[in-house]
Length: 509
Image (cartoon, rainbow, N blue to C red; front, side, top):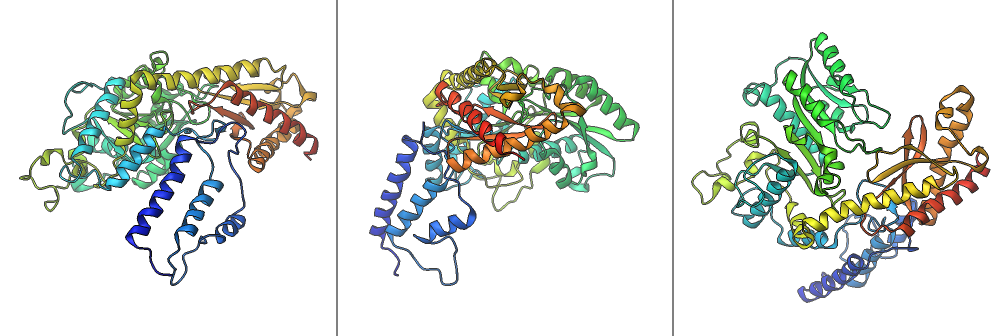
């Protein structure tokens, strides 16, 4: 088949854009499927009806109708993360304005490396970072100041990469000749709560610190780091000859959304000269809400913080800001001065951000959130947080009135609720009993029940809800991220769990 002409190309693009735009402005909701879950082999068969999935030898060009059918198949078989009954991850409900901003950035197809190829985007990134730093209390020129060529941080692809930057900056502060001479053999320790993100171990391995350098700190029942346990862990590591390099405090743990006590962590870091990094990937967006920003009290004392705007704020994947109290450290730690790209005598070369990063070229991720922020305003972003908490509060009310059908295991009062579904014969259930020898068999059955309930949701496409072990038993996490979530959606999801649970419990071995 011959390749399409330029005119054919334009017509096809218009057809595809119309299809995708319809999905953006009128996303699925209510009883529409959240997912049409299929096995890998079934997906291969589905695409065989259009263009096929494989790209074999001498791959042919396909006509417009087949390509359009393939795009329709992608939409049909993909998980609908904008559906208000998708609560499977710490993100959902992409803001349609952010989607358009992402399209705009893709259409212009440039990189945030030098001012000369991305002048608007350098100023946009600077403006967004300045306002985020202002919200976090990091200081700087202020949210209303003109954009600066040296903003208080950078955008990077995800929280794990941001942590890599932070830990390397921590090492560089401790060893200023690190870039030239390499890391010393000094044993160091990085402290993170037992509920913290698994990325800490990966970062330590990649940076050559070794996973043995990562020390898990005990938490309270909700999953927040205990300050006394942090001090004990630092003392124990020091006794082993390890220097405290950094403490990773978590503002919004992945499962229970626990917030570590940042002021107490900052006190310990100041006492021992450790870098304080705040993993605010999930919970930092509480800073947008006057009613909830107190959860991050003390964040202004951190050396760095990562903030995933693609989680609670609806920016499209990915949109991650790394904020730094001393952003000038990026130059000393990462600059190489490549003279073919970062010429000191060119116009506005001081704006070139690529020499202050490891990546050089980066996506223009700030654009989509900047555009959505301009449309929603501060009040609109605050309302997104407040609505999420309100819907989680509604779920708490329904759970509390369920006559023991649902039992909370952990509730930190933010945008999620971690709970068990309890079979009628076991009501009322004291979760503490499950940890006793007498409750072990029941705990095992309940542990095996949650995956079956979720599998039913996937097969029938009715909802997506995550489960995970908490206190030794698989439980559900109702996680509100999408501003389209309504009380009807909350009641529908809980009703599905109750129905599926009743049916699956009867068939469970």
